[in-house]
Image 1 (tube, rainbow, N blue to C red):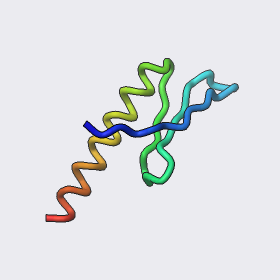
Image 2: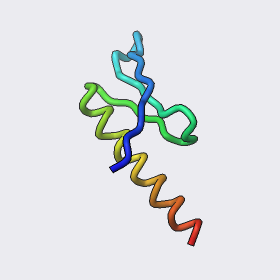
Image 3: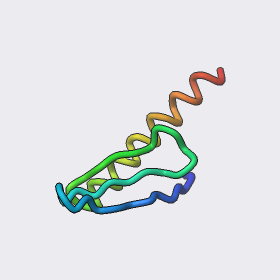
Length: 57
């Protein structure tokens, strides 16, 4: 499994964690907890990698 590094910040207004993977367009998400954000980012990455795989066939 490939490893990606996410940039994570906490929104002071909503108290949500927001994150994105630099250099990977479309890879951003949010979550109420760091675990939720991590799972959401994992899903987005899997979806984008699958889409890229289908485009290169």
